Structure formats: structure tokens, C-alpha cells
Length: 391
Image (cartoon, one colour):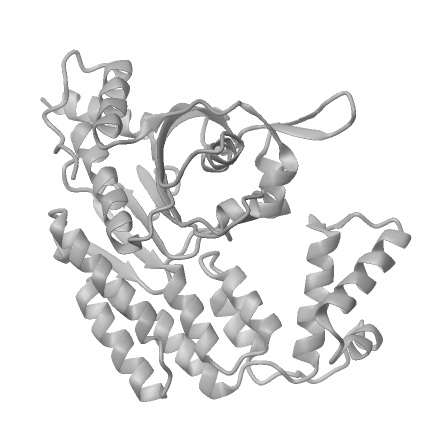
């Protein structure tokens, strides 16, 4: 447990509030680290996709290796934890500038946050991170932010339980949280569609082939042709897309029954307890078993209650994810309830979630459980200024 936020300290200036936020993280057992600002660009492109390139500030070293100003701090912190050989569990905090074109103001802004690596009691660790985010909002004068909760792990468990081709399962999971699933469900239902594909010959040759060999073949062909990217996609992403298409052209699309189950699942929202009951009812009716993932969900709700989070104030949605494919479980955002949901410039005050595969994808020898949050301190400071003006 960590100390509850007290009234914001005086004088109420941004640096004092940042100091208080770091002190709260330190009191909770998170030691501050300082990852480098300049990072290898390929790490972010591999984990976040080529679409992030247009929002990054890029440069190159003398050998031509592509570098970037860090567009977030989670990945640099994770890399620093691996490079430093930190013993697990490791609890770290950070505060500093990040650099990303946002279209809403300066490309340089400040983030604070915490990352918890190596804890195996994942439900308790998840709840602690949400509580720390609420504590950060309270420190800046917002004791009751809007709490949005989702769960990538639940959706992944549902996909595993459904009769889906592996390529299609990967496609749906990749699109989760990016606003493309509704289009996917309509486009992929009852494939193959009428009409020949423009790449029917290639797709037919790949149908039923060993995935690793097919991927290597496509990659070699593209490399021989001198193609490195197409429409922002890397060679590996193009190869994966061809494999997906060959699977779909072979008739491995969504059946009407499976599409209906997915649509019904993605329409569930409400408090965690209500949503859990509805998910259990749906899966029982459909004859599929995701009880292990739902048990994790329910245990996390219990730990949230233990951290004095009122579940009636939590808005859970099965369709809510975050557009980074390294998330593997709980995702959450804290918003100013006075801000319009349609006001995209407002953005979350705090956001985070679970990413159990991140360290292994960055080079760690083993899969290490991880969960964390990022706080947009300038958005939080604007809340504080608004509260002061209202006095």
C-alpha cells in the first residue's frame, strides 16, 4: 500500500507538483531512473508499427543507423532495466521529456510514470498501478477522474477459444483497440468473397504452406525486388499480410456464428461486476471456455476494491484497447470527467496497462510480467491551474 494523496502542496507551481508526484512514487517503492533521450528508432518501429514513423523525430548516426528522440518512456525504461541487469521484481519511476508530433501543440512534452516488472501476483500489481494513477490525479486536484478499463487478455482468450485460422486470429488481435474491428467483422464474414484477388496466383501458392517457409519466401522475393516498404509497411509486415490473405482466400474467414459471438462480446460494457456476469453468460451460451481469463478479471476487481477503488465508478468496455501491440492484459485510462469525450485534444491524464511480453521482445532471456502507467504532467498541471482559477 502507498500513502494517499494529501492536499496539493504550496506553492502550487508545476515543478513543485512534479516533485510531489515523484515523492509519491518513491514512497510506493518505485526508484527513479533516467533513460537516454536518444534511442534506436527500429525498436519503436518494430513494437509500435511503421505508422508511428510520421510522428517521430528521426536522425542517424555516423554509420547510418536510424535514431530517434524518444517518443515515449516505457520502452526506454524497459531497455534500461534489461541493460542494467536489474534483479526482479524491479519497480522504477521516471519523469522527463518525450518527443512526438501530436498536431495539438508542441512536439516536446513531459511524462511521468512507473513500471513494475517481475511481479507474479498480476491482479494485485494491476490494481496497484491503477491506484497510483488515481493518486496522481488527486495530487493535481482531481480526486475522481473518469476511469476507463479494458482487457486485451480477455479478447485474446476469446479468440483462442473460437474456431479461427491462426492468421485471422493474429489479424483480429492486432486490430483490437485501433477502431478497425467493426470493419473487419463485416469484411471477413463468410469469405471468400466473389471475384478473383489481384494476387490470386501468389495466394494460391501460399495456401497450406508452412508459415515460416512462406514468410521467408515472400521476404526474399521482396528483398530481391528491392522493396523495403510499401505504404508504410515493412517487408515483414507485407509478408504477414500475404499470409493472412492466403488463409482468408482459402476459406478461413469468419463464419456468421463466430462473427455474431465477437460482435456480442464487443458490445459489452458497464461496471466490472456487471460486465463479468454478461461475459460469463455469453460464453456459456456459446459453449466456449474463457473462465481462466475471467477469473483473473474478477480477482483484479477484488484488489481494486482493496485499494479503495469504487467499482461503480469504473467503466469497463470489452472493445476498449490501446493502439500498441505489446499490451497483453489490463489497459486503462483516467480522464477529466468535465472534458468532452469527443474532444480528442484533451486526451487521457493517465494511461497504462499490462505488457508481459515487452521485455522478451526487447531482448530479455525470459518472459517477464510487466505493468505500468504514464502520466501527462502538463495536462494534469492544466487541471490544477483551472482549479486555482475557480477559487
